[in-house]
Length: 126
Image 1 (cartoon, rainbow, N blue to C red):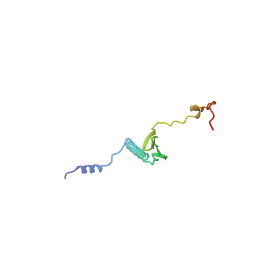
Image 2: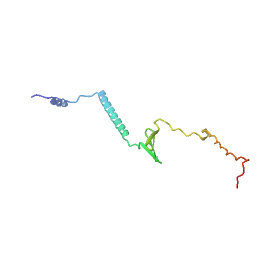
Image 3: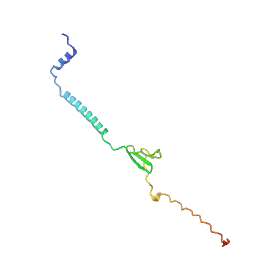
Image 4: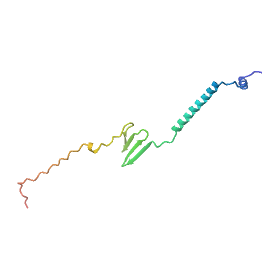
């Protein structure tokens, strides 16, 4: 009777297990430990990636204007009358308002005096 490959594999399984040295046992344990660490790291990475996060956008509305803030990138977009403008891009900082003493003092408005009527003008007739 002819033997096939499956019979050869079954015959190998029936052979008694050979003795493993201490170095072989340590190598097998190290491989299993590294595999377990890699799988655990992958599961932790997936858990962090798929965790619930806060909403990405916040908006404020008033007087026909809409301001949208992207909380992840920090950009601000303002829309009015069907047109939208990028107010603040990623990486830009808001400029703080300068202190009042740092602002230039506006020049006083020049008031033009009204001309006085001439003194030698004839008195109006009554």
